[in-house]
Image (cartoon, rainbow, N blue to C red; front, top):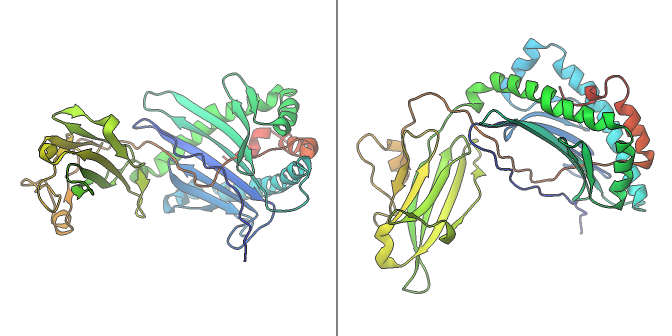
Length: 365
């Protein structure tokens, strides 16, 4: 039995410098709800941690992490206000999705409409923001908030672009939200969740050796895991020189407990194995590490005070935390679905819905 699956655009991993933070929102609507797939979903993130969730099944905006409960304690109407706004957004998304299907002469089938926007506070004190829309797994429309110009990905998107550019207040309103309101809420959320968002967890690092089918080459693998925040510097060196061009690295990926891991691979000649070091630097460490492969188990034996019983018992090496303060985390968000949204034609109903009262009240607060 063939099950029709929606197509989602994968926007991959967005890199951020250390000590930066982001607030992002993802909206998704599908033309036909399926098993475990509501017709409309909105999720909010601080860095890469979900903080709020709404879908067309529950029709309530709810906290996704315990510390978000503090927001409702300080603002009694926060959750109810957010729920009312999302009820309106849900209806607007359904209308816009139907409009798009009409533009593409699609009378049925499963189609997706998505929207992604957010802001960031960078480590150097600067601010950033973005807004993107998509349809059926493809880019549709994006805003350059510096020039206040829209970029359309296809002829259908041009219809919306022309409509929106007739009213400069639309782009200007988005710009104000991204640069002011969004940043203000990001700072509030960082304060509410500081015990989680600004903590540090040191990496456990292991070096292993894998023989290849030929005798003249083998692979050294360096795996760092269990660290937080996500930003980490890890590299293979040979006699102190970087081997970046000869290194294959995985993306920094999440563990179920909210920490992260990364693996680095490099091919070496067996007689030169001793020249190689895996160098790891992280906010939780008082100084960078330099690990070599040391024995059949692929482990370096810890020095006094360096390891922990848990680390040794599991065949891995753990390192002590850095004592000097807490380093705030940075954000790199992987969104495995996609983003985006659209409107035009009947999309006038969407535009009008944003003009009822201050338009930016439609954006999350």
